[in-house]
Amino acid sequence: MGFDVGTVPLNPDGWGPPETPASPLLSKHDGAAHPANIPFAPFSRSEKLGRVADWTRNSNFAANPSRSAGGGRDAVFDFALDESSALAGAATDDSSFRLVDGKPPPRPKFGPRWRFQQRPQLPQRRDEEVEARKREAEKERARRDRLYHLNHRFSSSAGGHGPRRDTPAPKSSVDIQPEWTMLDQIPFSTFSKLSFSVPDPPEDLLVCGALEFYDRSFDRVNPKNERRLERFKSRNFFKVTTTDDPVIRRLAADDKATVFATDVILSALMCSPRSVSSWDIVIQRVGNKLFFDKREGSQLDLLSVNETSQEALPDAKEDINSAYSLAIEATYVNQNFSQQVLVRDGNKVTFDEPNPFATEGEEVASVAYRYRRWKLDEDTHLVARCEVHSVTDVKGQRAFMTLNALNEFDPKYTGVDWRQKLETQRGAVLATELKNNTNKLAKWTAQALLAGADLMKLGYVSRVHPRDHFNHVILSVIGYKPRDFAAQINLNTSNMWGIVKSIVDLCMKLNEGKYVLVKDPVKPQVRIYEVPADAFENEYVEEPLPEEEQVQPPAEEDATANAMDAAAEAEANSAAGAAEEEKDVSASTV
Image (cartoon, rainbow, N blue to C red; front, side, top):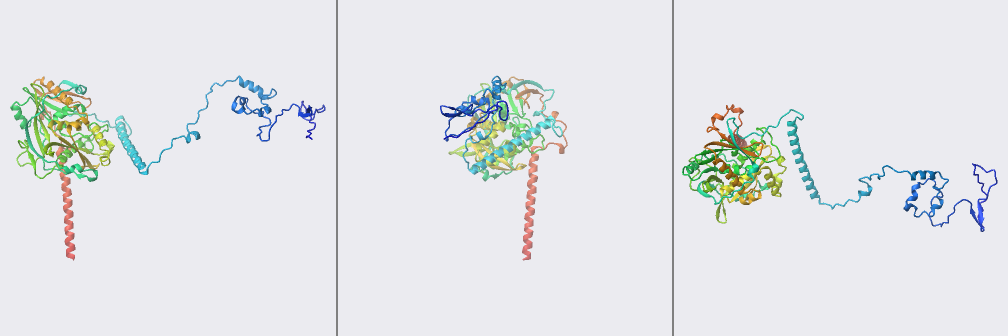
């Protein structure tokens, strides 16, 4: 027995019951009742039914095969594209419609889909993380300081905020007079192509002076076991030029050579392509002989600091970190270091003659002068006075040694703190010094090679405090073989001698007289000027300024040190006197 739906009237013209009699809803065919004009699909009770009828679906829905794959059941109740539906006309219009920009919308760069696709990082140890953060913070701080100094310099010179202050252009080491005649101009690019090999090894004509032995305990000095740098005020250091040397005058009178110079002057020539600051050398042609001299108070007597660095130093001379102040400080540090690392027990190695510049009874620094002769060609021989500072025993044989000191004045300028890096990253410290002081290190190496030294000791000396330029400490002492170190810093001995040979050949073609070789303060080149015979004497010196307005010479630095030491000694004596009085009072009370 089935369910009887009954008769449902259908009004095709509107709402409400029709005027004509109702037609039956179910029609019977073959004994079975089926609804008239109503689709029918068989279904199972386990299937999930969709919508009974959907007139709102998009016409593009059927184009998606994934959505219409299982639509055999739901398609029976799909009236969206029925001819009587309003969506049929819209579908026809949509089929002829074409988008101008069919690019898909941009996907978000970061979102839930990519959030968990990053490669997981391995957990680090906490101390490594802390060290990494410290290193990054130190690099960032150094970078900020460099940018600050750079921007401050550019803003002050280009008209930034505050008063305008133009950065002064580098000055020449000697004032070029209008009556001087420029004879030649040689760019450094020409020097780099020169090469000359000395045919024979040098010959020692005479050795003067006395040497003390090196104290090997300084090889064990490190930042954790530093040594205070002492001051040697009683020992005299001599910086005598070529023509004022009595030994060279004697050798020139005996016609031992045709060219005469000192190791300081020769090293300045040999390493000139590495120089940035201006310097000058006086050349005198007397007969068939050539003398290379330096002026009184020449720039060659001072040690440059951060000459090849990219960081600009303060311009004011009175600033303790200006180029002039640092040069004086480095010179005194170098002298004191060369005497402190010696065994000062009175045992000295003496040579043919005593120190030619010292008077009788005068205490002099430990130094030996080797007057050596090189053969440049058949007609030209060169004699140079070379210095060695100490002697040591190596496998039962005495070895000559040169002693020099690098000085740290403020880690902010270099970004490397010696107290932290010398033990763990010594190579990085040396690389930084080679970048900032390549000319100074090259000249020290050239002087060691000229003197025939077996070892060269480099000391690392730092200020006790960055703002205290009087007190220093020795942090480390490292030894090198000069030839190995020259190869390490890319110093070619053939190129060094090629530069000297070319300058000698050029000057030998000049007439008798006085000349000056000047390094240009800006451009990488040297110029040769012909000057009057009385040049660099009182005629060319301006009216002296009052004493209080003059720039203090290096000797005043020592006077200031004496004043500081005297004040400290007086303070110590007063403290000791107060302690003695207190002791006497307590004794009388008892």
